[in-house]
Image (cartoon, rainbow, N blue to C red):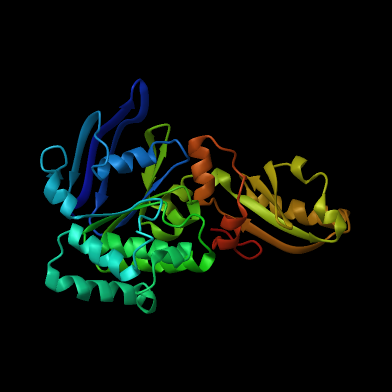
Length: 331
């Protein structure tokens, strides 16, 4: 398979500060590639160099075989960019935003209206085409921003933090749109710090930390390499369940974290821990409401690689986490 992006020794200094440190990776044509990292890791700087908004200090970038330093124009024609902040013109209607963007991208005059209608219908905005974008919700502006980025039918789409701050329905709608565009052949490069977003969308994920690529692989392979981040999650009935003293000192438990009404116990050996929890419940006259074993999540991998604390989770990730299993189950 040919590569949509090839990056060799990409480096960026801001004065004496090294923001991106000799980065190397490739993105295959037709894949959804996630670029994941904490704030300040260098992911946005990297994307800005990939989209010609920033000049590298060192290194080489090829976009569909075109060297950005020597042959940038044909590469730019094949790129669509959705910045972190939606770049819609709020004083213009949805229709006028698309027509203006089409003219900038030099879409032939005879095709602009047809493409604009197709995109507005696809993105659920056709009935709102004559309304100014200033009256749109954040999710509607985001969809319009994506439509503007692809009206010239780019082969490579860059998305910078596509969903932060959006409601669940808008997030799901944008994920569906990204998958649909990818299914039609568009290569997608997603820069994000939303771990579950990368897990749900991406064929492969690169994790960048302190300006360096720390890992690149599929989400499932990354998780498989971190079996030590396995855990057992238990919920007890009754008031004592809020405290459950002694669980954190149980043999085999490395970390205990409260997750909603449940306790998550990280361990290297979930199968050995399960009977101990059952014995604990019996000795404390507690009724077990649920007991699950969990494999490592992409979040656990991310925290291990970037030096964070495994076990610190967000409510959003918990609500959308699909990896739960029944009692004794394992992934």
